[in-house]
Length: 388
Image (cartoon, rainbow, N blue to C red):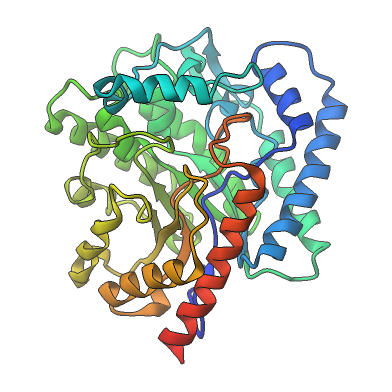
């Protein structure tokens, strides 16, 4: 994993806007309607080629495939694993319940048929195992081939894969006796995907919103200690799945849910850090641009807090159509770099993805790219001040 040497590198958290035609195909498949696989594959390749070019044009250094071929950042595993079917009953986030107007606003914003609803994911109804590695192998090959067409106009590339905890929390358990058994089974299955991504030469990004989000979702009515026990189970399971994969090839993304809402039920970063920090990842990607967690960069003033890891702070918010001014981005980067004590250990990123499920767009597409251009410009400004 490259660090920032003479300038601040830039990246993002994974999902990028999908074309409407691709959303239609993915949502149709998610709802069980027949989809022509050849048409889908061609659409994914065409859209992925375009999304790589747009990332480079925006000025990003560390790029990916935008997750365009996946229906969402975690439910896609139902096509690669056994054991899933039916529909989950997912708890509504506690802050949205606390402020009913926020829940109604969310429903109005998401009121479209062409959308993958992550509150209605499939559930575990049988033993979970990874049986179809062809899609992840194909995903890696495709990204390799499309990146080759860019003639090296990027620094590195990553591919995302979910934490076993978000699958176990959001894809209801109707099979295993204990939630821990379910987490461990999913982690063992994900080992195939983690290893394939790493062996293909990409950075592996583990998307683990469960390590924060589930405090006010699945565990909203339970003591903090019970949630932290769940976090420890997930952390141990992830580390087992990562065995043999170099720490420097792994980055961990933790967030509190990528949705517009009050977020005043979010667990503080300080509460989860003692356990989250034990994951064998060389970089940690955290939400630090949004108004609920922007202050938590101060925790990194303690040199023991971050340890020897790189930090990928979100300096762009992903649920608002405000376009951050480059100077605001630069200020955020500089503040965090000063807290960490070394700008070489900072890579500028986004709080989360921009379309974590097909059709679920809170930020309009043209604004997404304006935000990413502002990210790159802000990083250039900060680099001049931090590195001279």
